[in-house]
Figure (cartoon, rainbow, N blue to C red):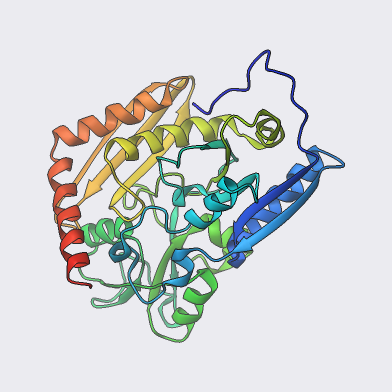
Length: 333
């Protein structure tokens, strides 16, 4: 669970100002400005500023994400600002935040989740088609090994090609005819007021989403109770319990955002229901299972599901992927 504010903490004064570290992409700024506005609404008089910057993942656009091999591609620069005292919090797409954080930092808040589904966006010439009816050899762009593995498993007749850049850049490449379709996150398109570009919402039976997809994570300096009190007004308990189960699942499998691991989670009564999968890169092997348990111990649910998949062969699949990544890195690919 997210660390609770102490019932009788040592008296602390909320910070009179709050500095937010953020990526400077358009989607990141939309998300960060939403957090800023909500915190200002909850804390009248609080002065909030935003420090926007590029991360490694924003700068290296000519190499597939999987070949860069860094789990902090979109977070390290923001975390550095907090560790050197230049920011109190950082706003992340939770799917980009590693499950193990640097010493001295913590996940202080998880916001209400938007639609976590993957979606298909197509070039105008392909609007009559859906994934299952696209002509053989249609070129689909995605930078996610998770999406790639699952879609290869279900649609071996399609060709998949890596695509980099922010959401708007990817859409420009699609509209220019470099791809017949793209696989993107519904939440990102909706936050950018681009929901009209969604052609098909992909069912979880076909593509389980990324851990944390659709939610925002607010990272902060550990044990700063004044800041924690300020940001926890945005914490959404249902999303928190679902995402903590998902993140524990990923952490137990020792995976990152560039490993073909997918999830889906729901709250049913007082239980968290978690579905998870691990797939080989070629889509030939896909292991999937489900686990449920009390929502007050969501991380145990994630750990149990990870162990169940390991027993079914997930460890061997992941080791093959890690080995191939190490070889690619050694060759400078």
